[in-house]
Image 1: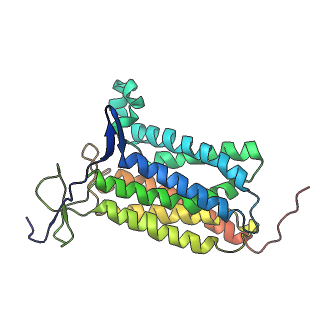
Image 2: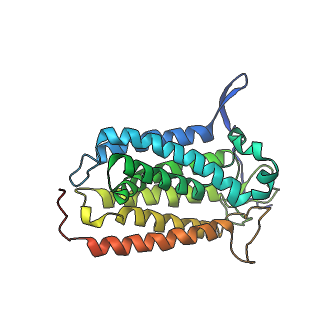
Image 3: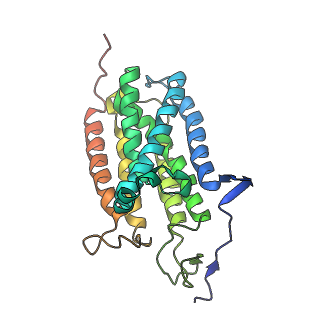
Length: 273
């Protein structure tokens, strides 16, 4: 064991418990991300160029919440443990036992945005841009909660900031959850806030969504180099993790959206009839 290894701080995943009712940090991370993102987005759409309004953002919060929960859970089921849940289908409903997938949650949110766009008559890409601006908030809190839960730890390391996680053996490991909180959360949030400042250019719809997809995909693929692969999956095709594989479509779609938006930037916006 490295003499410079950091013992895990011994966080309790449960913040407070009242009999059988337990309030977990992980649940609070989702709630905090949704509520902070909701309030921030209500301010952002007041800037020139947005057709969304504050009242519609209230409705969007409901759609996005359903998309995150349903998509995240089903993504975890089908991407990471399909055999187990096909044999134990009732366990799919046991969300209190943990198990959420970001990539599944992303698909769920995109479906929710599409349904919201049809209901309110707002462009899908504008909604995607709006959600992208605040999505890193939830990612930041979610990765911090992963660290508190001592889950999704990194690979063994000799670096002085290696952490000895409970149930992960005596070797210090990369705190990959904190790497993801920094890159997927804080850095991506700052980039998108800078890009979203001032007036919105309707002709560049999809740019912010594309930057989010590209940024997250690259950050996740990079951090997977330091994150321990899922024990039951290991390396797919001998060299790539499931997280990296699922990030490839995000990178591709992100690039397409960016190229499409940059081609439309500066073009005159069409008037509504």
